[in-house]
Length: 274
Image 1 (tube, one colour):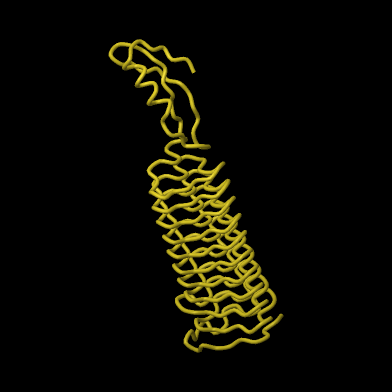
Image 2 (cartoon, rainbow, N blue to C red):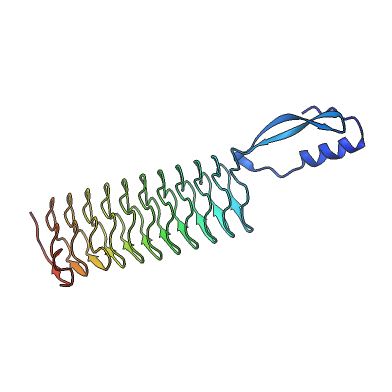
């Protein structure tokens, strides 16, 4: 870079500008003319993709190839960590809470992790898609390769756990209730566990198919055992406090609306295969 320096004061100004901390991958360097006391010099111009990494809290760590996009990492809370290749996309990690850990290759997409709740942890390769983990509740745990798809885990309840390889598809686990637990490889397909009730438990390999467990147990608990609710709308809108035994409700609409008119029954469902 060539500096057209006219006096000692200009040298000082140029030195300060050149030693200004960089914003790593989100910063492009250019030059712009600056007029000081009638004299022109060339100073570095920071093009930070519209505040990509601005106003971050203290104890913040951003690793390489991260924080890319307009306001991608703007106004995050204290103690924030973004892994390699994370927080990519406009507003991807904007306005998150404190003590957020985003692993490598996560929070990718428009508003993917926007306004994420305090004390949330995101595993490797997770929260991928438009608003994939938008406004998650506090103390949410998102496992590896989880919450993948547009709106996959949008506005999930506080204290929820989404285990590895779960919640894959559009809106698949969005708006689930507080303290929901989704097992490994569960809630697969569009809206599979959409609006699942609070305290819901979806065990290993369950709720597979469009709307498989959608709107089930809304307002209260539901317990889906291993390898159950497999098929389109298999357990759609089942009643509150229902327990579904292992390997049950297999087939399209197999247990749809079961006990829905009597939500206080607290029933146990076995088989129910079509």
